Image (cartoon, rainbow, N blue to C red; front, top):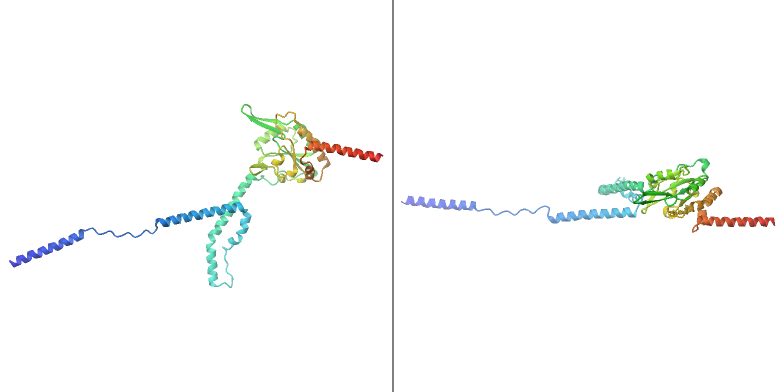
Length: 335
């Protein structure tokens, strides 16, 4: 009887311990805390703003340098900095000096490459811009023949000087020839090398000149690619003509507004097609013929003496005074 009781007690103890063992295993384990992320949002934000600040600072500095200095000035100012990347230790340098020099040379390699890239890019851009803003060549006209070195060059504008053109919805484009232009060109072609210099396009200039000058009194024609683009306007640059500036006259209805050499300008009244009684070109013939015949050493002081005056009228007045003085001297010697 005692043996049966002992077995029952042992089985109850075993069952209870196994129940406790199963219950302990069945209970869910508490989740372990996850390790902190290696790249937190704060670090990403700092990195992002640092990159933006560096890019903005570089852009601002590049813009200021491009505005304040020419490419040659920047090249000269950064020359020593760019050469510092080529480190060569001196003979008496210590190991520490060599290490510091090598470390500095390595550190400035990227900035030096950036500066060189900027200089190359700016030179390329300025060369492209110059092709649109500068005359296409430094010698717009061929050399004068040796026997023509004494000849003056008469540069004439086209619109509102020799012609005037308008556009209307009914008629489209119409080109009108200024009164006296035929006599003006034919007579002065005997004394001058006549050049038309305009800011119009070739496709307009060529057919107009062909109809305007059937006798080929105009020796050369220069259009917009030969002008200098500056401050939103196309200017005639007489220094590119390959001619002695002392023997160049620029006749235009907008002479001082369209030429970079005001000392060579000969202003004439602008013309529109409604002024059918205009005689400005014919009135200029005596003055221009006198200049060509007298051949002053430098035309610029002569034009300066007429500044602010109507040149044809002032020339006639001076001619009459000169004749009176000449007649007075003759009478003096006769007496």
